[in-house]
Amino acid sequence: MSNESGSVRASSRTWLTKAGLTAAMLLLILVSAIAFYRIQQFADSAQLVSHTHLVIEKIHRIFSDLKDAESAQRGYLITGDESFLDTHHAVVVSLPQQITELKEMTKDNPQQQQRIAIMEDMIDARLHVLRLGIDMLADRTEISNTEVIAMIRGDGRQTMAQLHTQIQRMIDVEEKLLRDRANLVEQQAASTKRWILFGNLLAVVLLLSAIWLILHEIAHRRTAQREIEKTAAQLELTNKELESFSYSVSHDLRSPLRAIDGYSRIFEEDFADKLDDEGRRLLKVIRTSSKKMGQLIDDLLAFSRMGRKPVDFGKVDMNGLVDDVWHEVCMNIPSPPRLEKKPLPPCWGDRALLRQVFLNLLANAVKYSSKQPDPVVEVFSDPREDDVIYSVRDNGVGFDMRFYNKLFGVFQRLHTEDEFPGTGVGLAIAQRVIVRHGGRIWAESKQNEYTIFNFSLPKETHA
Image (cartoon, rainbow, N blue to C red; front, side):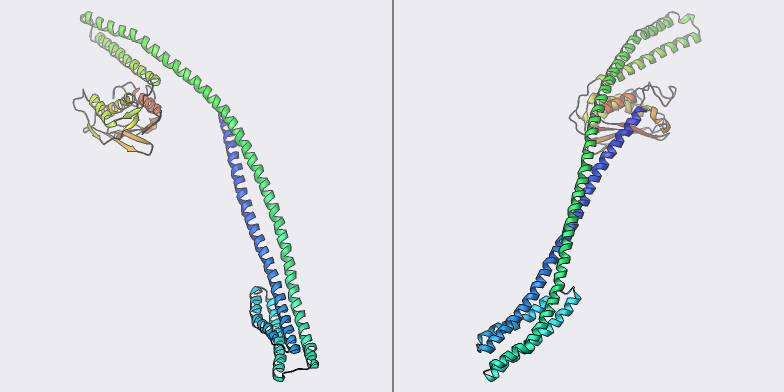
């Protein structure tokens, strides 16, 4: 229960750390997006403010140019100096273009468009009157002061007053729009500052919380690592003690077993004529059992040595290794199975230990396919990016996958001694060797059809 609760707490801390970092990151992204949007709004509003200034400036420029045209006309009427007409004509040429530009600048404001149309009519009317005065002087050569004063103070003054009023209305509208836009810019700037400040503060809080959780998790993992190292050291010591114990027990059992087998053989030779069939059968059972016990002890010692023997890594020619092992397995078999071996890539491992793996797997394949009319053993591989999967397949009796968990256990057998002889240690030895190489071993089978043993080995290692 304590392990489960500790695992739950560790998982909870990991989840909180990830959640905190994710939330901080998302919040920073959100704040950045909002800040970008607000800054874009601020820039757009500032551009509108600048645009409004330009509109006001353009209106002032049009009215100023019109007054310049009027002043030039007056100077010409008073002095008769045609140089004044250059300024007048320049204004007459530029005013239509400036009015067109003003219309384009205020095209999003229908009311201003209407006011500009009225202003344009009034300017056209005023310029027409000014043109009449210039033409009058050209026709008569001279105009009296009284006539000049009448032209200036009469309809001219009234028209300019009306035009000034119209232009002032337009300027008032633009100035109100300018004030509104300036206020909006200030509000957006203040709102953007608040958003950025609040978002950054919240993100900092989340990041600090996540950092605290990470530091806490690091400290916890260091403690857990020390516990794991302590437990591993205890397990290593226990394994060494168990291996030493099994070695001692196995070694000490050899003497009495040899004595049992030897005395049974002597008894059988010296007193064979005094024993009946049952007595001779019992002596044979004793000798067979002692030999089987000796074989079990040998397998147990081999399994024990596998845990102590260092792994001598090097490049292994798997094709040559399989050929050597197959020759040994089939040496004393009258009709061995047919071997179908595909080219095998080399691996990185201990050749002597891997030889023991193939010896067990190929011996099992031959044994369990021996009752088939056409026994076949296949050896093939599947190269991967970092490792190679080697496979041994036979078309023998197979096994029930429901008992798979017993397959690699010591002294665990899925068939009886009468069906197929053996001690049940070979697969346990194979698994220990493969695990020590950093690989894994597994199997799949279908009864009375096939069995495949697969194991993975690294292509290269620095062990």
